[in-house]
Image (cartoon, rainbow, N blue to C red):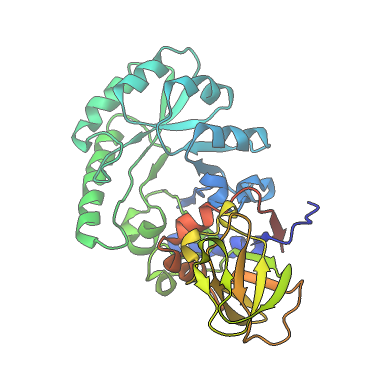
Length: 362
């Protein structure tokens, strides 16, 4: 990719592979890895790298369109859509040989009207409060599915809502899921049984079954505060830009929209071409900071749509063209930036916009 914009996200493929190995070592032999590569691979665009995806026998996404993109991009193995789709998407599901999660009667009936084979995983609602059938209905629902010869049950799964903070509640979820799995096994051979995303992998070894679906830890970031004590990870991304304009202003000079920052002394100001349209949160205005020449430079003024300003008065020999890191994973972490912005690392990385080029390294 010919990148000319000074603002880029660097994506380290060797770090991604390192994280995959750590997860494999954690869950042990006999447990498959289904990487969750939804939302453009959590904003990394790793979902576009067929060389990486081909290392897995099954991958997970959130929407049918995400699955279709991966299929049309050349991935030939299994793709699983975590969320039950909409009836209007059934043609795409069939045409692209996609496996889907299901948990409603009405959608099942729509699937049953088709002649083509459709592979499904039954979602059990054990306490997420979102989707899934009541565990007590497992036998009833599977028997309902079996009325349609074209609907092939390949798996059963659940979502753990609080595996980062609530041992007791998660244990109850897993016990409920285990009962559902046992009921299902009486009626059908299950190729895949899965319940654990990142926090389940880290905290509940009894939740692995034969497949896990890591999300943010694949990309080397914390799924909760204790992550680093549970597994060794390497952050995959660095968000960087460059200084494109420098000026020195006098005391009592206003900086940016709405004059939200007024200098209190003679100040050297750098302009950096990344703004909220790129995913740099406006909530970082006047309280965030970036890294320039290995020193932290405070963001001053309101973050603009396409740029922001930083105070570089105390940084020696700053020049146009110098690298600027929004996060570099060492001096400034994604988690730090997210906390300052009043959000979580998941949202911060996923919402870096498409106009920021992704540059793959290593």
